[in-house]
Image 1 (tube, rainbow, N blue to C red):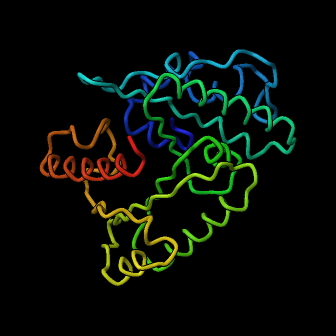
Image 2: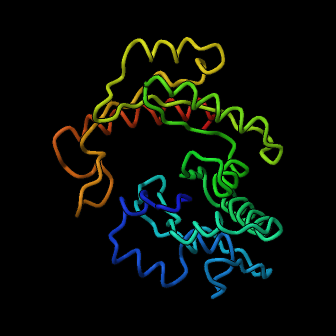
Length: 245
């Protein structure tokens, strides 16, 4: 589920022309938040309309012998919830979204929610719905402070209950390689050390957004695609063990 108003995940995996068709048919994450209507940017449709099924919204991106991957597409219209002050209306949105995720749990083995790292209403909805957090960070000086702030927010927010477990994935950016000093500081931290995955994600140009390139990075048939796929497999296997999948 792409719960980021910028919906970069959706744009990475689906051509714009295809996305516009789903958007016009109200088949985005926005329909999970409120019923389609014409109330505009500064209001919320609080009608008690049926909550859609995830599989009715989500196109199937990939299919395997033993499973498949669907994606509930993102929507810029989610940004409206940062502009609406009426708590009772936002409560209706949150309740509808949590019901949407609850229904999806009956139909899918794993639900992944992509959201931005903020204290926004949308991120709060994601935190209320999840049982585990995967936090990607760069091995930089301020990463530890960011983890501390996130943990404080999750632990002190009463609506987030039960509290989700946390797993931290160290990755590198194009100008910031993983330094042994910072990585050792993270792994040796009394609170967060046990949450850091043994595997890390090195920087790869295959993961960089490029005009005209759509789809899974490991399926582009480019040099080092196999190596990147192997790295992702190692990370996913470690997460599966942690999460009991």
